[in-house]
Length: 113
Image (cartoon, rainbow, N blue to C red):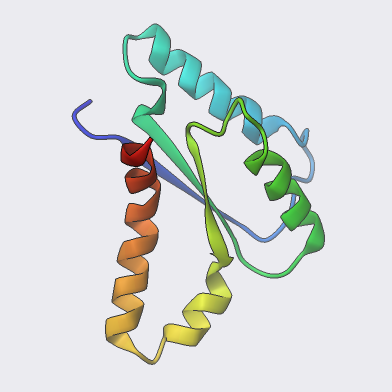
């Protein structure tokens, strides 16, 4: 793979109807699969973003964000993306800059490591 893949996950809550570790396990499985096929484990990068202010979602994301096993392939956006969009939606230039930054940040973080 010439470039990393970016998987963007946008959520408003924590998992329901499945194990809380389901996402974590899927991320780890992906990394292990890539490694077994001779690719860098971070050839697929996961970007985790929250919309809404659900405290359970925040706790779920904090837990993932602190998990050292997924940390090398997981990037968490630092803000609530719906709130930031609402702030910028009437300013086309700033909105475009923010969207581009949001899409590039996970890959730039990979290159900085």
